[in-house]
Amino acid sequence: MVKVHFVGAGPGATDLITLKGYRLLQEAGMVIYAGSLVNPELLTYCSEDCEILDSASMTLKEIIDAMERGIKSDKEVVRLQTGDFSIYGSIREQIEEMNKRDLPFTCTPGVSSFLGAASSLGAEYTVPEVSQSVIITRMAGRTPVPDRESIRSYAQHRTSMVIFLSVQSVDQVVAELVAGGYPETTPTAVIYKATWPEEKKVVGTLADIADKVIEAEITKTALIMVGDFLGEEFYYSKLYAAEFQHEYRDAK
Image (cartoon, rainbow, N blue to C red):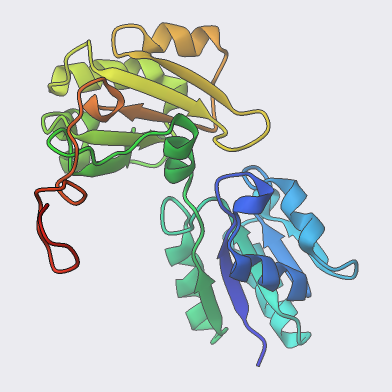
């Protein structure tokens, strides 16, 4: 039985899609991709007779209608979404509408852009004794954010933070982070299109990152990363310490 397959496209580089996602693209009779965000080079993995639709200009109903048409035409349908669809992927509303029409589906995860960004910097979000938690959030915009999830309230924890969909308001983001508790000396990075050929990296502190981002003319498709995990302070984990004994190795 043919199905709709939600596939995480990865952060941008064409070889960072999963092997399963790659195979689903090869087998698809229809692909509906998020054209404003997904690297179009990924579509070269599709067959020549695959029907390709760009969802950037489509409404939710039009997307579901296309999925249903594909299924009724006995086509495997791929819904290709940026990064991993579980983060700001609008997958819930699509699945709810698909369930109303009894359209079968599968989900194949992808590499999120927040992971691609960390890789581009060679960074670890969970540095021992520095930070063991990661907050993924965004500024309120046309899509509201609950008051209890404000950047200012999260900032009091001073843990590793990745802020999506907010670089256009970077000065406001910085103000909220500082008001919430991060010192202005906190290391900060902004990554534009992580892992894409046109990737840009801007590194600084909360004191100067806004000016650097404006100078670099970055206004969208970028992540703001903030926290001491980007700093010079670090500690080695116990896992590989010679004196640390566990079930696979005796202390030395």
